[in-house]
Structure formats: structure tokens, C-alpha cells
Amino acid sequence: MPGSGWDIKLLGGIVMGAHWRPAHGLHVASAQLPDEGGLPPLDGATGWLNSEPLTPAGLRGKVVVVDFWTYTCINWLRQLPYLRAWFARYSGQGLVVIGVHTPEFSFEHNPDNVRRALQDMEITYPVATDNNYAVWSAFANHYWPALFFADVHGRIRHHHFGEGEYRQSEMVIQQLLADAGHGGGTETVSVEARGLEAPADWASLRSAENYTGFERTQNFASPSGPVQGKPHTYAVPARLELNEWALSGDWTMEDEATTLNAANGQIACRFHARDLNLVMGPAASGRPVRFQVSLDGQPPGEARGADVDADGSGYLAHQRVYQLIRQHGSVADRTFQISFPDADAQAYCFTFG
Image (tube, rainbow, N blue to C red; front, side):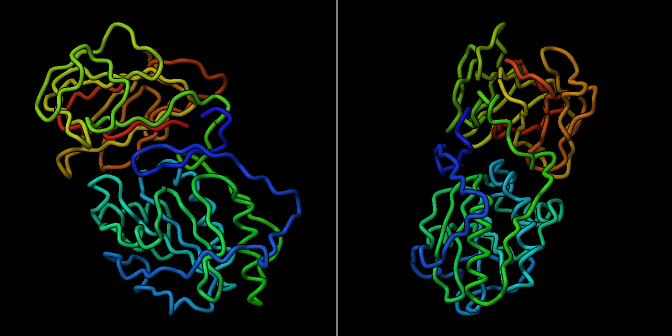
């Protein structure tokens, strides 16, 4: 959102926040960091990846960063480069980074999907899968992403919800390591984030995340309105207003996702942002689904996203975030369309950047 600095993906909504910008060279004194309680148990995890199960007792003597994420969250994806960089720089000095993957969508409960995400995103630090929300609840968390910072005594000393404040967060890590006699340093990491991980163009962003499932969708503009839970033939109106979206063809709109029942369906959206992404995938596992993207009725060309050719073509292989549009230069109201010559496309959520 314009001027907000970052947004937080809240379970059930969006919360807006603003950056805190420390002065250059400022260090966070650990004596001034509050004691927010002991590190909660992790034994509610439904599995562990990249590690044997970890416990608060076993982590004593380590500075710990616990990161709550789900692999299709665009806000977390833009945080990820910093997590990888912190892990690379400080793990040899006594830092442990733990990702807690608490899924939003049903397909994110599938451990094979999470493993694929770890490989694709080059995540090598320990990850707890939290399919039952037990670790989420133990931390009384409500957000993706959320960071909790614990000292070597197992006490939580800082937290941060949402994107941003990376320098402040790293200075907290440095100070907790220094207090434990592990060095820490004073220079902060520099990252070159690309693709989905690149920071949003907040100054031009006028479109907010929107779900395509019946339960949470907004601004649906097909003339018949949404029809829950059964096949229905939709049409795209002649004109879409900013932030409206519509379907064309034979779709079934369930609570979480909307699925194409027959070939030649379409999704259209009027948006104002540099980037347009769509969480989607093939409804039938293992069966790729082709798609064609257009921008104002033309192939996207240089405005194509990472998952699209210049002529607008691409395909769905797995359930994940697909970057479909990344514009260069000035940003204006544009009409996006994605057409599917094959059935079984399944769409979950628009995100923007």
C-alpha cells in the first residue's frame, strides 16, 4: 500500500504498519531489550526438515531467530533473502535460524510441496512443519511473516511482524551474539533480491492482495456474482474498475480456491502495481496446465514476470506463487488477463508488489 512501508499478512486479513529507521551506526543495547518470556516449546511441530527436532533446552547457549512463514506468502518471500544472509553470516558465531512453516492453504500442508519450496528457494536452515498450528499457538502468533529473537538463556528479547526493519533486526542479532561473547560484528548484510524476492514498489502500489476463493474474495465483477461450490459459467464484463476481477468460462468457486472445469477459461483483473502474482497450480497433481497472459489485450513483452515468456505463454506445474507481470518504468492502471486452453487450473490469491 502506498506509503505504508510494509504490510503484514494476518490470519484473516491485512494489518498495515510503518518502518522504524534507526540512525546510522546505532546499536540496540541488550539491556534495553525487554524480556518477552521464555522460548515456547516446539514439540507441536508435525515434522522437521533440514534438521533433527529442536527443543528450547537444546538451544540454550545459542541465539535463536524463529521465523513463521508459509511458502506462498509474498510478504515472507520478500523477507527471505535476509534470513538466508543472516544464517550464512552468523551461524558460525552461535546463531540458529528456525523456520516454522505454518500453512495458509490446504496444499501447503503437503510436506512434498514444502520440501520442493526449500530446494527451489535454497533454504538450508532448520524448518519445523506446523500443520496443526501448535507452534503458532504456543507463540501466540497471528502473522506471516513473524520473527522472534531469543538470547542464549532462552528468553525472547525482540519480535517483528511483517516485512522491513531488516537493519534493526540484524542489530538485535549482533547484540545478542556480542553479549554471549560470540562476536556479532557491526556491519549489516547487503542482499540483491530478485524475482519474487525483490522489494515491492511501494510508491506505485494501489492494489491489495485479493483471494479468488468464495470465502474471502472481494470486488468480484462477473455479472452473475460468485456462485459457491458448484459449476457455473461466468463472463468478464465489458469494463473492470480498479481492483475488480472476474472469471470467464466454466468454473467452480469453492471456499479456498476457484477451479476451471472446462478448457478455455479466463481470469481478468484491473490493477495498479509494478508486479502482479497469482497463487495457483494444476488441480490434478502431476498434470501441467498451459496458460497465456496479456496486459491491456497485448502480450506482456518486457513486462513479463519470471514465469512467463515474452509472448505471454507459460504453464502450471506445481501449486505455488507465479510471477506473471513485472513492469519497468511508470506504473498505471492496467488490465491483466490469463487464459487457460486446458481445464484444471486452480487459482487461490492475487498478490502485488
